[in-house]
Image (cartoon, rainbow, N blue to C red; front, side, top):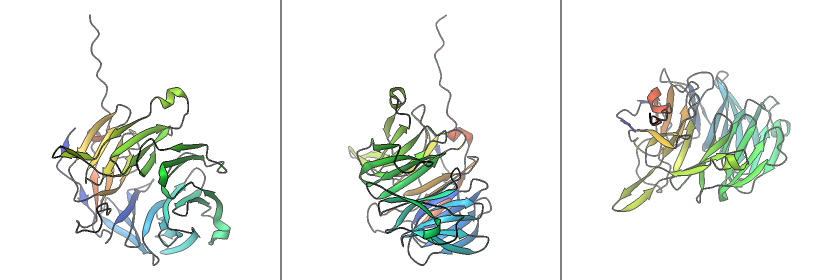
Length: 340
């Protein structure tokens, strides 16, 4: 494990309030950022320029995702799901939930927008339809509790809710979850992210732990699952434990970064159960993480998440760091030489 001195380049014109999420585009180094300051911003992470901004009048923006290079979707506290087009400079309302919309994902496989809300539902939308929920909404699917996190890989949709529930769907048949699970972790789920190879998902909790899970229910596959402690420290003989807010998988190597309220970003090799790297401490909590499409950049939201209530804190900031292969590439296992 190596500690790097640099935290990366800080982007200009950051949001003025908490950063709820950031995501790299699948086709460029454009970065989409949502914030509690009611904005969604588009940055060119390489040029350090803000390409555009939408201010949503109704409330905090709790999530965002790309549709294509210059357009995307936002999930808002005013219950609305918005479609935003930076080239045209226009936004419209794709649909609504009955409570704040916590998560939004775009499925390239299904051509659908999927949203999760604190109204205990998942909704699927057709973004090609004319504006208005009666035309664009494909379906509503009840959840056992408030939706906290969503993740997609291929046709798999993983829904993590309050009460430690995890529902796994096949997007081609949303009538019922394929699997209903309970989180392996004892405390509230913060983030769920699917493995890029489509075999399972990582799930993090408020209590400094991550679990590694597999879709395949066979005994052999389930024997591979495990959980580990992270983002914690010992002080005066007692453990101080921090929420793990963010998980991001490297698109090439399948290793992953976690970000916690301790201000640290760690990189892990999940297959070999090893920490590969820890970056220098950031000014405040890590709220979100995203690798660029080729894994060459890592965007980090350093943004206080109010885990200790309202108190003075460092300004919200977005850092972009160049990723060195040594930080993310799994190290080969060293086997002892057989006796001669």
